[in-house]
Image (cartoon, rainbow, N blue to C red):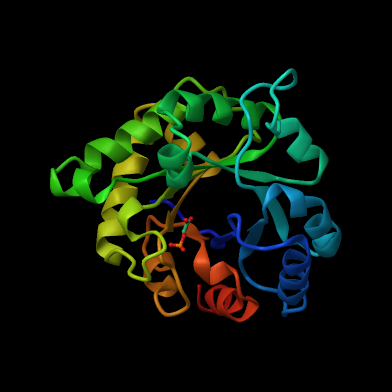
Length: 252
Ligand code: PGA
């Protein structure tokens, strides 16, 4: 049995806040009493440095929302994993469904990004999840398994390398209506099982966390984090206001 760790709570601010708003929000979160959760804030690229200054030495961690798969070179507009690490990021979201859909990111691109993130010492937060159509067609389990395996298979993990997999059913993101916690628990079991085909049990226990994302709020968070297979949550809309996000942290 996998022991329950401190929940991981990640705020994905997407492209929603200005630099000033990001700093205000980070200050409000920092001012709250110490939480019994691992908290990660993922601001937009342009606010990462400012937020890093605000949360310095506070125990709150910093993440980015994407990175490129090459280390350096002529890649106009891209940001490397090493550049993010240089700014103090410890985490990076990879393969979010918005990137898969709007920017046509494939499983292969996601895989290359995961490799580069690990090489730079970052913890990738790999997003997987089915669309409503895939769910209706009975392809949910296959889709999430494929996405998770293709992202991670062949990635070399050092003893200290960590990976987070976020199960995010695409059709509930931003809708205010999360999936049933039993459904999420089952999806997590499937993902964990798929990882057992690639890594040994000890690696999975020590190096992997599998979290849930999709319309998490302070009223439903506990129903997810209390599930045995769910190690935390990835939060979008409800991470944009300190009151909502702190409510999630307190209830998790
Ligand atoms: P949501 O977003 O919490 O607004 O559904 C989650 C996400 O996109 O990661």
